[in-house]
Length: 392
Ligand SMILES: [Zn+2]
Image 1 (cartoon, rainbow, N blue to C red):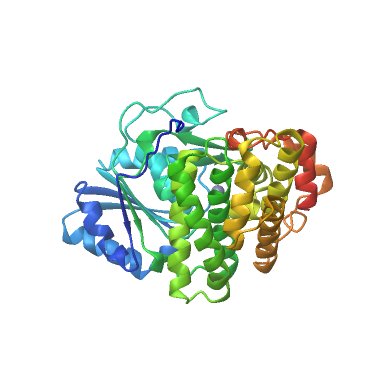
Image 2 (image 1 turned 45 degrees about the vertical axis):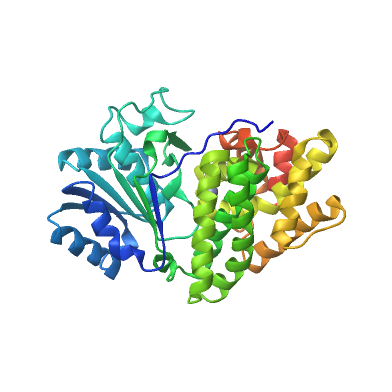
């Protein structure tokens, strides 16, 4: 029997080098007033200038907002208010995952009541979006988050110390436009952090409790692309082939996580981000192989006959690009391959990021968010703490 599943994504996905040229034309197809949310680093860039020109050529009135960093509650509420005030008929997000999340949440909130805080999982009032969001066009400028095809937006509160999602199928983008050329100028450290986030978002859905046939196929393809392209894009940012493959891997990761969930790496990373202000990609990268190793050990001890171990063996083969006669060797080789990749990409340790031994209990407590629920096996507090200690 094939287990039931659901697969939902952006209404339209446009992928290709140079496709950003049509961003204005696509956005104009949704209305004559646009709220454009762009990454602050794009101010004065040719990409943003072209978008503005293309919109005005088509008679689209434009309200521009620039943003930097992971969105806060007040920022989302403000963006939604501005969308309403200018009568926006379409919201365009152009930037990294944080910018896309901000634009996505604003598009959803603009047509619904209340503050975004009311809708956040775990901290809100349990409110859900009822009215369809404004059409949302998402164009990522980093290869990693896959936010252009996910149905959630991550919103933080530094004062309250949380980082939570607003989630609804109504938040899925109308058009996701992925132009790998927009990622060409990403510096090496950012390429590594976002690229390892993409890899994590392919690995975790593949071993997730909610894994399903549609995402399995995409995950295995994406993992092969990511492990090949990531070291090349890191070493030479001008390697267009590597940039293209990494952008595709990132898109596939987004499709996977939106439909099969994540796991302990993202659970732990959410806590590290909220409590210690560590960027999302770096947080994931810093604990990735340690979490894989802990999951394999826990599955060997407590669920040796379950599907999790077989998945880790197949994952190891995908990561290494070859088969292994003994599944134990495949599982070990997968963990080792990720460990070597993380080291080659110079990912800082948690200690270098400001986390110390005394912080571990808080980090454990903060790891129990929604991502953790899809982890292939329930990890004890002691096991999560051991992952963090190994990542110090
Ligand atoms: Zn992620």
